[in-house]
Image (cartoon, rainbow, N blue to C red; front, side):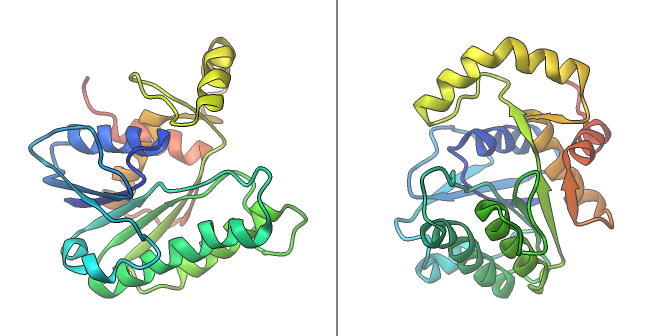
Length: 227
């Protein structure tokens, strides 16, 4: 399996990258982003590109892949709907449309969020925009598209958020999150379980396209590798 990974330096992306590098059936991982990925591995290569809204100049670097794990995302906190739409819907679709042309047999996996509004008409701005993005991705001519809707994600394996405020929040809430994961394993994901589940949907191509927290847990357990 050859994998493209967008957002590899973010918290979720770091977890997905780790699982891709550990997976024996993944032969190549190429990260794409505005900054370089610090990890080094024989399977890993990276493309640094400043303008992700226009990836035509790096099209040759994006060709020949079986899967794309799209982990780019921003918080909607204090952001206008227009700005959030540009960085969520417009950016995602600009990349996805190009990838669908270059790799029609690709499985595209998108990190959305629990509570996403598929009707695109609800009161929550971020949920509407995410729903619109999901719906547009499902219309593209990929082999398949999977829309991951995790709720709380617990970072494992030394992974940390790039956002300093989030680092503090995770540190303060770490005991609570660990307890929540133990008590409600189907409702709380981890960076490890998200990565394992993404690989598993590419392998197994399950019929459901919206992957909720409980589905992430089930898929990750089916894909669990020996540590």
